[in-house]
Image 1 (cartoon, rainbow, N blue to C red):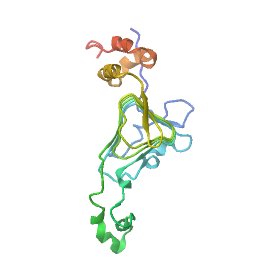
Image 2: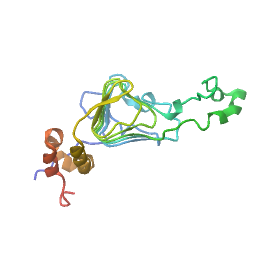
Image 3: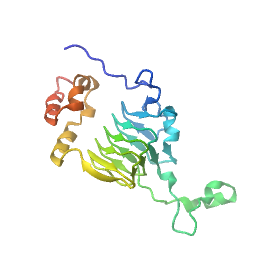
Image 4: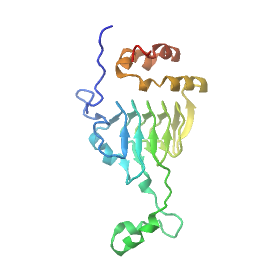
Length: 218
């Protein structure tokens, strides 16, 4: 079989003459952000500033975890737990963060609601201007519509849109979703994926099962 070369997962700009498209993994410096191979972000103005412009209020310790082979449209935002304010008293203003003697009251900011890590699965498409709220989990193969505000978990292979985002339908029935999750093509070796891109992009699930790597392939 002819040798096929996978795309380089650590190239910053994978599309020649299109600086607006960046692979995110080579850009990330924060230990609180994890991004899988080949996940990209498209932005005509500030694509390389994703970590500071698109991940907001990220003071830790929760993480943002984004899987492999995800497509992020311009303006996708992740709101992290640092955006939370107290709502059990007369004011929501975070006085202690402003310094001076107000800093004595930092205990008033402890124990705020924290939904934990925000997790985006593999092969997820996040549309233009979508916003993902803290602690949300978006399943593998999901599609999030333009300007959607994702406030709750989205199942595997679901299509969700709106504010707040609601599941419109699933891309496959439960049986076929289980088959796809078992295959987990995104975990195949890149060389094997390279040989079967037409099947991954446009084949049936049966075709994908037939293309799955064997121990000899790996």
